[in-house]
Length: 398
Image 1 (cartoon, rainbow, N blue to C red):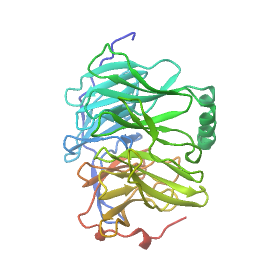
Image 2: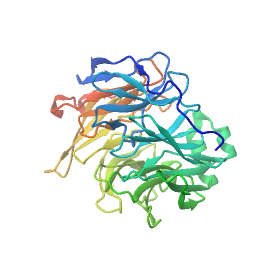
Image 3: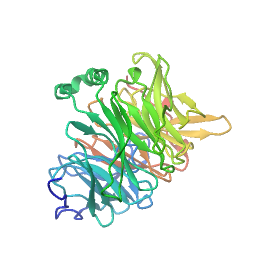
Image 4: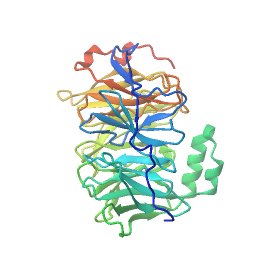
């Protein structure tokens, strides 16, 4: 590495609270918009990442309010914003070690860790030229960072945002060389371990929050063409399909539940034009698979435990976060209820990416409804979901 990466003087500075509280116009729930800086993009971490920290009192988010994308946190009680990074290149692929105040991200080609209290940084790896680095994962014991690297292709320069599926299909069919690697965080001299090396497009590493040996990664591409959800044992390099798909099935948007044993996802049977949509949970070894109906294919689902599930709704007439509650007597879910309005309008609009807090009392989501490219919102989950309107009672605009 040519230079030592160092924090700039803006790391640690506070921004005045921008929070505003309002009652959702459709559901009546209490919603707080935490970012409101004009002409900016502010997003909480991808929904698979543990962005709530400090016992759920603070939330990590990314913002370009200072001219470059850096990492920030917000105190969910006071609304005070803190800038956590001031680095020469934008950050990407951000995550946090489970139950630890350490974040991981890419800064350019460097894999960097950040102590969320002291704001000290360390560089652990520099990815080779000609490769992209995907979402990072931190193992449950805090010792290793894990990531999927994928070879850059000429067709990446020709990507048309209006024809994303065409580009994804071409990239998948090209078979870029990809690797799943891990590297020690504390031993700076250690070389990374290569666990998977293949000519398939691999992305989206997710680490089990309880078992440091277990991760999932995905085979990327149009879901109906890819065998998406894969498991990997970092100790043995054994790899397997977590939720195999038949010819008429598609699944994705996988995430770990807090037990570190089960993986949530959603998908559909049939075609995109006439889908039988569902969401589900499965043990990492493919056993204990359960699936339930979903309102549409264009959504994300997240759960901490089986008790409560949040779905993004859709941009095709359901512009609300949705909740499902486990009913043990029926061995299934009640709902969905509408929780908060996000006004998601299309695939080129910001996705809500609803994420439950560790105790299930709050949900973070992104929305452009306030006028910015994207802002960070948090909605309280009411004690009695029956106080919320059911989706079936709302007017759905198709």
